[in-house]
Image (cartoon, rainbow, N blue to C red; front, side, top):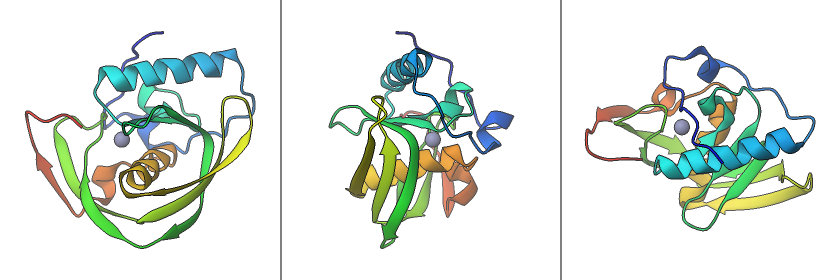
Length: 155
Ligand SMILES: [Zn+2]
């Protein structure tokens, strides 16, 4: 596995609509492995493929419960609204208050090409919405109610 370079805000790839993944092959599985390695190395809880320069619809998440790999994730239901603080590995030292749905239901494929459903609340729901936004060219700083600079913290 390898730690990849994380693309920073301002790069065009972060503003693109990422392409759906049609084939789950060895190359994609290697990318997912490397994305996880990169996320852990950066102390992050989520990373989307555009953040490593690949404009395709793949996401890795680990909020402390183990790795979750989402291929072509799609939100099929959302409910409630919560404002909370967010950061992003592509926006170092920036934090902001972002309104997200409290609960989301998603459909996605796993690396075995099985279709899966997941209902998420709380931090996982927030993280899923943040990462899916990356696939649609949206950064949290684009939609945050307020943004602040914090030098020491990681997120
Ligand atoms: Zn992000």
